[in-house]
Length: 553
Image (cartoon, rainbow, N blue to C red; front, side, top):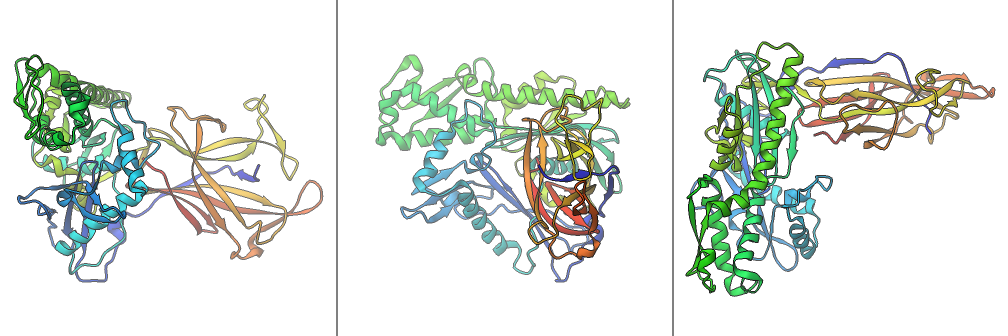
């Protein structure tokens, strides 16, 4: 057990926004944003020097004959494990798809996501998922820099939450279309691998659009890649294992999957007598007229497509409904004049172009507009650029999705702490362990923001060894955070602190209860929140002595 002790008074403050303090040395400044998606990746950029910066989406890609706002998130490797091609050029070799799904091992996957296929491909390649993702991002970066940034300097990367970026783009597009202060929106960002929900209220329309997040967002694995996987399973049921695994039929199955992916998936309406014809070009398949398979063409009925779609659509509908209800509940508790209204559900991301998804949400929410904005597929990457153009739009506050805090020793309370472990500290005072929560789940977080709490640590010798120690930031996913450390509280990140270089005469000398010398080191543990980044740091006499990036969703 360490000797860090909580002091009584918290302190807080707001950091000036980067737009107020950034200065640039080179003549041309560029913001480049990347939406690294499970199935497709997009890039956009803007030059900051322009009086009215224009967001430009990259739509010319190697391997594509037509303009397209995104490139497939696919890589191919040779037998030695070296990357050969990427994006639309990747046609042969060891093909890696859906790599984003494996980057977060803590993310729960529903039963319809066959992660084992992705893991098997990586095991055969002999590369960890983060290295494969880095290969792809590096290739994209080199290509885009060749197009847009030949004259510009490259600045440090800033992370932006995907649904936030999508919301900025979508609401900026609708700024002149009857929006009003106090309007609430739910944004559904449905991509290839994941679906993210976020909700905002308009705080101000002019001179710039300002938004505040209303309730904690939600993210889950219900992207359109799951439809492809379920379609493949349906094909396997249709033709049987033997024909499905026959190498001579593989090109035919790929052709049908491409047709499903590019045409059926977005065009399907879910109407009772709707049929689609999928062609297994070149495949030698036995006819089965009862199942609709004839001459290597499958006539698939609406009910069969619903079997593919409905488990994923049901997940999305449930989560959207929950988000809408949370927004209404929050605004009702604040006596908001528009508490019972959500202006619109905005659908962005590739999967949100699905007619069936839109029709199901319209059916579920007849009193709310369900809108697919123009250019919704590239909303994230264009919105990410807008985050660096604060003269146009800004998110002024967000919602915490977790509790964040530290464990420390507090004075034992004979009423509140009865029955819990206690111990005598160095000065003969009874203490007990409690959590100090910097941020509560659902709390409004002004952005950017710095939150301080003061502590001291008792050292029994003043040496290089004792002046190096570790501090942990914890988080908790529960709605109500526990008062004391328990199994629901997990370590978020660890900060290695080195105070060997401080002026040791500033460290307070004391005598402990045994009559021995000891020293109290006073410091602040600080949490800084900005965009998609949270930093955990220690300050001694106002000087930062170490920081670490926290896991922040």
